[in-house]
Image (tube, rainbow, N blue to C red; front, side, top):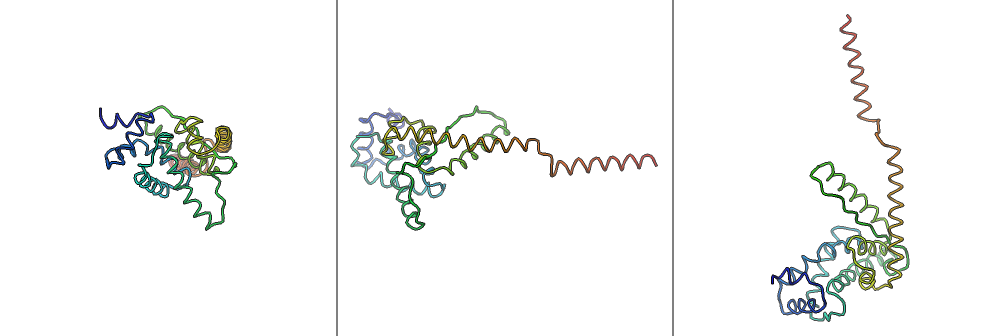
Length: 233
């Protein structure tokens, strides 16, 4: 059995075995764990902190903390949930430091609405235009997501993007399952409302005519008129 196959299993017994290997100094096992969880944990850090570079730095610090404390992992939750909590702790610590400087109250453990984003996979296409359209839509959704309260964003990413269950999300964030459901619903509602407003505005500007297109047509017509008049002389 390869390391990658071994590390892909999720039962707590296997998590304990992986943790024991890492605690014994098996860095290759830890590298595989990081690669397995990197995308999800980065998303969690990014949606919590709202900054790419800060999220990357926080994730690295959380991994270092995990490596140092892996011997204390007891398997009461999955390794995935344990890592998520370490990432959240690191991110929240950073937010608290910023909040103390800016006198802003953190929203993560409050009952304020947080937004989650539905990940709606689009069919793959070799067309550069389709790829560009997907990238633009993804960037738009990410911008909208960044405007939502942090508590909603975290629930949205865990539930809709990472497809974690209500129970897993509740364990990860340390909140009741009912709160997970309400925040998830609120996040999706706010996100859809915000996107709908952008769509309404965009509809009014479909096939926009002003600018370069207008200038080009006017210039072409004037040029043709001039040619016709010249031909008559």
